Length: 518
Image (cartoon, rainbow, N blue to C red; front, side, top):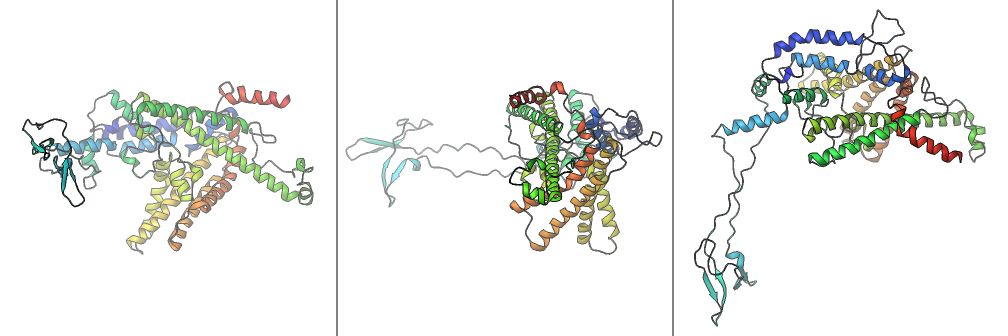
């Protein structure tokens, strides 16, 4: 269907393929259940895209879709009903061709000021009197062969030659035609002019793969409005690929370090443990200057150590998520840019330095990855925006309807994110439905709207170092219950990187153990 959505006159065929495609996806949902805890991270990824459970199976068995089941269902519905999909570069090429075939289109060519070749060789006094002429390198003949008038001194010595020839200035290149995405033309008529003929080519297959894998839609019609992080890699294809390969290696090593450390923390049981495992005062510090305080306030000291450890574990989980996603993304980038010759500009970084976030809005809309942005908008944002604006339509004006619709959009996006993450937790192991993820993302929606209200009332946006502390405290403090639910469902027990492919477990840990033992 991704191949057909780029072809002309295939809408009926795509609609006919929609039903069997959905049935195949749903069938694959119930086809297997992962039991081995070593594969719990992959079960989580499967559950990340699952919203179903099978009533005919045992209640303790969770149903996890194939790795991108929900995304595939959404894409299948999209490819079945849309007129088509096109690249923004196709619009540029189409408009340039249209301008070529329309001679009445006028382009204003800027003219450059003529520079007198003689005046540029005159040396004048401050009052403007001609003192002398700079010597000419070509002698008494001008470039067109005409004789130049000599300028002689009182004694008859030729000082310079006047050049009265007026060589024509080179015509400046015409500026590029203004290219804009048409808004007055209907989508169907534009797609009819941009759609490709139904011919199976390598370019068509490459476009189909890019249509599926370009999750953010950068460079495509449905990706307008998504934040594009600044890319520091070279613009040339060779340098871009070399730097991407280095980033891939770095992300892989970082993921390996984070995963390996999670599995060796004393007291933490990845197979079914809680990040809040500290349940006793830190008596290991009783012989230090903190000993009297620990003895006097054992419960408070236990809480401080518990939440310090849980915060560090949450940071480690976040580091693993970032490095894991970057590892897969850079590998995908190498394939599409290096083998399929995609434009490097369509594969910018996945994250935009989230540690520099100055507000929750900055963190969730720009700094954090936007992989599931379209999914959250389709499954939650757009429906709630329509419902909210429709409910208040009889009682408010258009401006208020837009404001209320924006509230529904924000709530819907975060609720969809909470539901998908919650079902991912549900699919990881026994324990029933967990609402921690839904509560966390719903609270993020309310706090994001609170930032908007603050900006509206005070006229000052949330930002600066205070905004950074605010964003870190809210995200890192609120995510801990969700991270604990993931850990309790055996998420950390699996092997994202097998032991025989782990440099940390093969080389780093043995060296550290040998050094510490000696």
